[in-house]
Image (cartoon, rainbow, N blue to C red; front, side, top):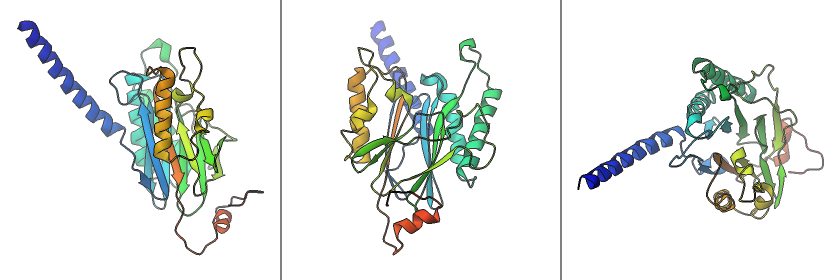
Length: 288
């Protein structure tokens, strides 16, 4: 009877701890809405730490006027030990996204926030002296078929257009957050065409570096090519299930997935090409 009493009490305490942890994790990594402006969004998070809902990966979105800003990032390290740095960056993004007019200015503010955190809370572990956060910052205006991206040492996103998949590479990538400060306005920012019907797939390295029993990396681009006609929600679910099957449910690192699709704009009588030219972006041989 005494053993049963201790066992039942242990179960109750574990249930309470899990409940508190899940509430804290939901508050930190808030669920993204299915719709934001002209975008259809779906996301997934797979934590490497057992019983955890979050770890060192992060994502967030913010609406500022007639545009949407998003971030996806990966703290150096994994599991619950990286949650503090992830929380710092998420809090800084949610505030700074509404305060800075340009994407480079936002990136600079986030870098300073990460540097302050690392200065105030130095890492005691001698094996983890170098701390940084790889991140992708995106800005998608409602009125123009473009996307602005700053890549801070993060894996490049995949662009799905008309059944084909390509990497959206940045010609001038920036260092990870926590290792630099943006200088001149516009440094590191890349603008690409993002038309109605296009889907952008963001992910962390926990996806592409996941291995199976034979130590083969997960072939994300090849698998995504099978699901190019899927909705953002179906695409994320396909990848999540396939990734778990590839690793037999044992991820070695946290993995975050974010799919963003631009929906057709309302008819206004303005030609789409005029909107592109108004943004100062010209594409030879690629008619919107």
